[in-house]
Image 1 (spheres, one colour):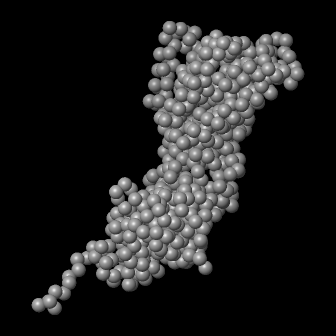
Image 2 (image 1 turned 30 degrees about the vertical axis):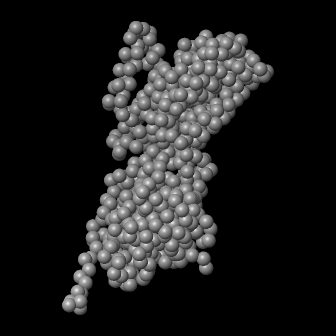
Image 3 (image 1 turned 90 degrees about the vertical axis):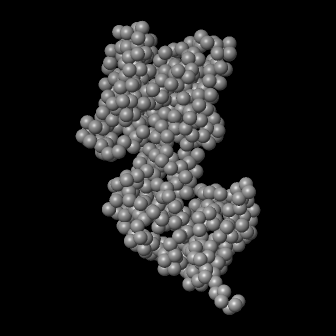
Length: 320
Length: 257
């Protein structure tokens, strides 16, 4: 996809589509918030994926962000949703920064499994912590928006949607800017040839560490937004199946554009919602079958449909 | 002026195998050093130690009198000790232009700050200039994995050259290319690097290339330097002819009868 087309999508079509989302029916608003919140996690995974890294433990940061939203108001007088999301993102970014010192040294399956190991350690801590509600979790306090307390729950959800859409768009702009920078362009370089990157005078571990922190920060923000929308946190948010779902959506989305994770996440949530509604005993078959179809027929993910439609034909697939 | 590179009693062992055995050499700025030797003689081990890929088992390495023993590739590159590879190390899924642009971006900014665009207009122009200087501009938009071997070699060297190196070590720059291409590749490379005032050290098996381009020859055998002379003398050296070139020496035994 040309840079111009990509810019039109990012700067005009995406904000328009997100704005239109605010006028969706009430039932779809919640779906929209959760989709975009999880899309943030997938956006972070996309960053890692482009460097040839897969994390099976992104639930660690998603859950940590969610729990921060639940725990922080109990100790400090904060109920503002924006502040909580920012603090959760900073907190998970710091967590990723610390964990990253170990993980940046590993690649391939070792990286993926170590990520999962950390998330399962956190899961173990949560289920053993009575004060954090153990396996049941606990409810999140009602949040405010710059001092405004919506009386109607539907209005609150709509405001939260706007906040989530703004965060998601800002995240896409940031990641896009990053990917066009020298360090961002090293993603593909690291995946292709780490030795060469070292002999260009740059330590690839630093780039991996930075990507990991950004991915953790985005996942934390996503977890915080999801927790506010759901109004409840529990250890399932950290469970490896949740992390697997994020990887699933990354494959479904493709990594060819920063908007792909949001698109893929929305499609996945719609697919799952309808699959559960119309095939409550077999929805996993439907979702699994769709993933199979994507891998077989769209190896570049759903985003490759958009690229093909815009370009007719394309060169070697460099997005995976 | 201090030598650009000085090795003192440099050794490298891998278990019972000695890959570098007491190497002592000083390289002056501006020299074009041809490193010759049979396979396993220690040539690449020497290059790997200088460029930080391997850590010497003992001995010292100095770059303009600065001790660089044990430096990693990143630090060696930052100092201005760059290299190319026997098997070109490229970013396979990037185009020729993108490969060079990434190399130039890292060289100029150290990849920071992370929001500064890679494809700045003047950098793109300079990158295209380098592609032209190395005569690979026609391959600008071709993916590295599809490039002919000679072009891959030139791109590999061009990527090393944009870091403004003081010393560039070329590991077999003409291996795997046709005989016709060898001299044109070396002409392009040596001309481009001379313009940058780069000291060149190249590992080579082709003695015609060594004779034409080197101003000095280091001959390796069994981990040691067995000759360190001007090309004409080195290529006439008895040990070099026997152990490096592989000639069977026909000794005149008639005098004994």
